[in-house]
Length: 103
Image 1 (cartoon, rainbow, N blue to C red):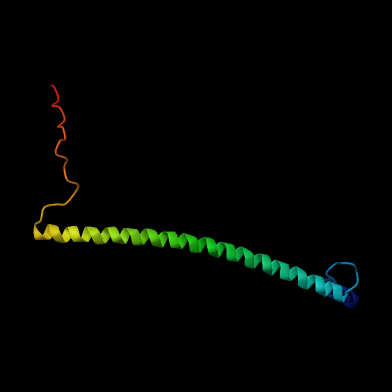
Image 2: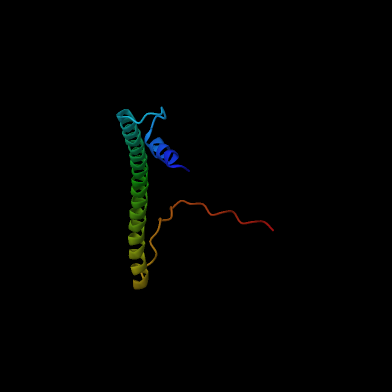
């Protein structure tokens, strides 16, 4: 590659709109394009972050709910150790027994 080709190749990188002339408009276009790319990327990242934050909040609320259930069950274990009868849904007074199976 000759020196002249190297110079053309170097300035060809700077010629943003590929019109053969390096001008201030090329720089302005390059800056505007880079700014748009950065803005788009930031918007995508912001959207993804918001989505993840929402999911984390949902999972934290699920974990908090489960922790409350565990605390309630821990009290039942303590009562069982003390020898108290199991608490549960009380049986209805008028429930019917299942009929005996015929052989």
